[in-house]
Image (tube, rainbow, N blue to C red; front, side, top):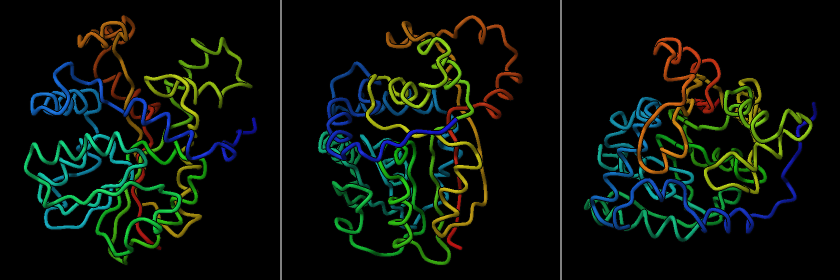
Length: 280
C-alpha cells in the first residue's frame, strides 16, 4: 500500500493547528501559568508517558548543550534545564513559546534556556549554527510536511560526539489499528488520512506521518546519521471520557490484562518509535 505525502500542506496550516491548541495544554484544570498548573501538567505527562524520562535521560545531560526541536509548552525543556543542561528550545508556534517562557520564569530557569520561534525545516535561518551534545525532538517532526528537511538541518548542529534522539509515530502500532477499525471502519486505503485526522487529542491534524522501524532508521541513516538504538513504547490504555475528567480508568480489555503482557504489547506495538542516533 503506497503511503501518501503531505508535502503540499503549508507550514502555516501546521502552525495554525498547533497554535490553536498547544499539545498538553489541557493537562491541568488549574490556572494557566501558575506553578500548580505546570506541576500538574508535568505529573500527568510523565504518568501517562512514563517512558519519556527513560528515553530522554534528563539527568545525563548536566553541563551539556541540548537543542530541542518542538518544545511545545516546555515540559521536557524544563526537565533538561532542571537537571543542569543548557537548552536551546525551538517551536513553530507563539502560543506554545509564550507558555514555555512563563514556565521557565516560574521555575527560575530563564538563564538555562534560550527560546526561538522557528520552522524546523529551515532551522538555520533562525537559530545560530553551533554544535550541541544532544538534539532532542519528541513527537514533532512527523507533523511537518518535509521531515527529511529537518533531519538535513540537524546535521549542521552536530559534532563527532553528538547524540540525536527523536520520537516519531509507529505505523505498526495498536493506535493505528484502533484508528483504522474504530474511525475508519476497516477502510485501509484511507489509512494515512485517518492517522492524521485522529493522531492527536484535537482532531484534524494537517500532517501526521507514521514510520515502520525500518522507515524510521532510513529517515536518519539516509541523512548522515547512524542509528544506535530503536525503542517502541506507549499504548494509551485509559477510557477517554474519564481521562478528560482527570480520572484514570483503563478500558476493560486492558484492565484485566496482566501487567507483564501489557508491557510486552507496548514494546511490540507501541505508538512511539524512539530512535537514538549519532553522526556517521
